[in-house]
Each structure stands twice: as structure tokens, then as C-alpha cells.
Image (cartoon, rainbow, N blue to C red; front, top):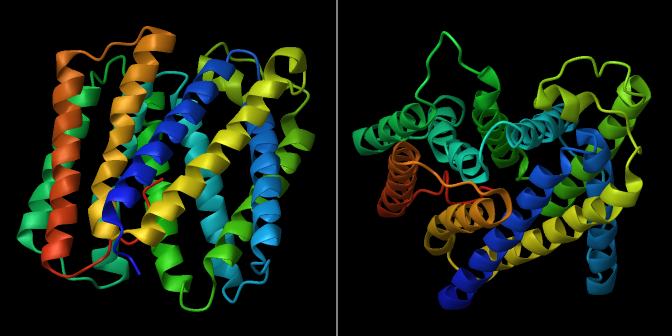
Length: 314
């Protein structure tokens, strides 16, 4: 029964701390590893840990989905969605990239209106507008020399939001284990395909850090990167364990706003490890995004809906 809200809050705070550690490693490693090399090792480690946990817990391991086409679309969206987020770490401070990802509640709200036929009142539409004003304040685009790579966290949020809508559509017959396994299996397959297509670094011809991260030759700095890549898998597994435990033992409406605590952890990590200090404009934008998102959570609870709060945002 979901009645242990204080413990759930502790677990969600620990989950966000673990995610910020993972993101910090991903930001540090981009200078000497390839994105999909990291993605492959991270996924293999996480997949092995999850399989071991399920075997110990005697939980079913089910790969077969009842919605093959929708599941394939969800895997693609999830895989490339978080590719966009990791790419964003090459051009944006850690807390800025993380904050821009949190347009997710606004996008889910919009998609729920059109794909799930949910009723969205004017107050939540106002919250959506406030959130996107926050995005504009953070990016402050000067289109004459705007780096469009700074939009990658928003592309991540777009892909992730669509994948959450698909999960809502397929949850009736597919269990959370099936949804998890299909993603990990798909991520491994996609990463291996990318290795055979571009793993030799032949397309690494542009000096932009994002391009370098995507197309750098694989396995050239394993003495530096291997332990860090393995660490991303461990921290991701720990984060997901804390996250799903929080949503299992506590009310989602209570714990979901505490996902924004990752902005505090990311600020501290960015400052300590990368000497990143957000300016006033960025802080104002972040506050607008957080206020808009939390207000959506509050309105969902008041309307007895669970569009955004039903599933974790990470």
C-alpha cells in the first residue's frame, strides 16, 4: 500500500542524487570516449544488474510484447531521446541541460490532450506557457549566432514525452518488466549497429564537441574510460532502484515534485566538478520551469488525474 510518503521522499532524493552522479560522469567522459560506446557499456551493465536482481527476487523475465509496433517506436524514442540529452552536456552546463529536460511535464500535458483525450483546464495551460517562457529565458536565443545544439535537451524531453504516452497506451497488457527489457535490448542492438556503421571514427570530421562525441572512434581510451563507463551503468541501476521504490511505496503525487531536487544536485556537481555557476537569467528560467511543473502536479492531484505524476520523469 502506498502510504510511506516520508520514506518515499528519501528514496526519490537519493535517486536524483544518483542520476546527477551519472550525468556528471557522462559530461566528464565526452572528451575521450564515444557516445554510443558509453551507451553500450552502460546498458550492458545495467541490464546485467537488473537481470540479477529479478533472478534473486524471482520475478518474471518477459521480453514478448503485445504491441510490437508501438514498442519499437518507444524504444527508438527513448534511445535517441537520451542520446540528445547526453549530447547536450557537451554544449550546456549540467544544471541548464537538466532544467531544459524538465519541459517534459508540459509536453506530456500537451500530448495527453491530443493523443489520450484528457481534459486539460486553463490553469494547466497557463502552467505550460509559464514553463516555456522559462525555456526562452534560459536560452535567450540570438538567432544570428544561435547554437542549435542547445535545443537537444528539449528534443530529449520531446522524445521522452512521446515514449511516456506510448507506455500509457501499452501498459494494459505489457508489464513494466517487458517495457524495461525491450528498451535495454533495443538500446544494445542500436548501439552495436552504430558501432559497425561509425565505430571506426570515419565520420569524425567536424571539430564541434557534440560531433566529436557522437563520431569519435570507439575503444581508443579504455584505460581512462572503461571504469567510468561501467560506473554509469552502476549509478543508473542504483538510481532506477531508488526511483521505482519511491513510486512503489509512496503516493506518486507526493514524491513526483521531489524529482526537481536533481536541479540542486546538478548545480552542486556542475559547480564542484566543472566550475559551472548559473547566471541570474538561468536561475529565473529554472524557477519558471519548476513552478510551472509543480503547479501541473498540484492541479492533477486536485482533478484526480495522473497524466504526468503517474510515471517518473527520469
